[in-house]
Each structure stands twice: as structure tokens, then as C-alpha cells.
Image (tube, rainbow, N blue to C red; front, side, top):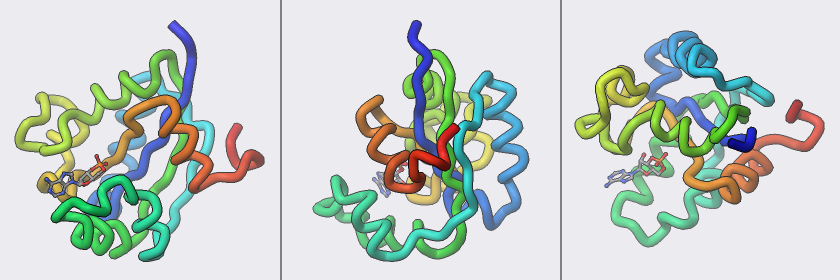
Length: 139
Ligand code: CMP
């Protein structure tokens, strides 16, 4: 299986609660190599652009407010089958539906404040990584 990359954000709820270390430990222990990482905060314009695909959804305004309310950790991760394996590791969007041992089951509050993002395709991983990182910041 090919080695590829995915993009993740540890979202404001996870950062506020002090879960950065625990979540990064779980990501590393699951075989992902961190090839880019930063603590940053999205502006309203950033979040509206990043989540443009959801702009017609009823939760869009709340999503933008939540994602901009505090710092996030943005990172690019490399592994064989990275996109699919990372989505398995984080679990279902709604933590109530997430499997035992997944990051969202362990650390997420709710479907809206769900602790962590994972790209849903190789193409989106590349787009999302480029949104947060220059080529020089990805190793
Ligand atoms: P994520 O999959 O990382 O990116 C889109 C986000 O929108 C998702 O995480 C949730 O934070 C949020 N989201 C998705 N569906 C809902 C929903 N039904 N209600 C509220 N927020 C949602």
C-alpha cells in the first residue's frame, strides 16, 4: 500500500482541555509520522474558506464560531494508507457513534466540538495541508 499524507487539526475544544500531548502520543503510537505541525488560530475568513463545502449547512455559522474561538494544532501526517487509517483512528464524526478507543470517543464532547479533523480524501489532504503550510514547512 502506498505511503501518503493526511491533514489534521486538533480543534479548539481539545486544545482548551489540554489534550494536545495525549492526542499526539496516540497519533505517533499509531504509526503516523508528523511531517508538519503548528499551533495557530483560524480567522473567521480562514474558517469560512476552509469549510466552504459546508456553507449551506444549518450548522455552518456555529462551526465557524467554534473553529475560531481559540488556538488549534494543524499538522500533516504521513503513513501507509494515511487518509483512511487516520479516519479509522479518529472515529465517527459524532463521538456518540465513535468506536471504543478512537480519539473522538476518548476526547470529543459532541458532534460539533469533536476534538479532531481528518481529511476525507488524498486530494482534500493536499488542499488542506497547503491551506495551512508552505512547501518549506512540510518535511
Ligand atoms: P469535521 O468532519 O472535521 O469537519 C466538518 C465539521 O462540521 C465536523 O467535523 C463537525 O465539527 C461539524 N459538523 C458536521 N456535522 C455536524 C452536525 N450535524 N451538527 C453540527 N456540526 C456538525
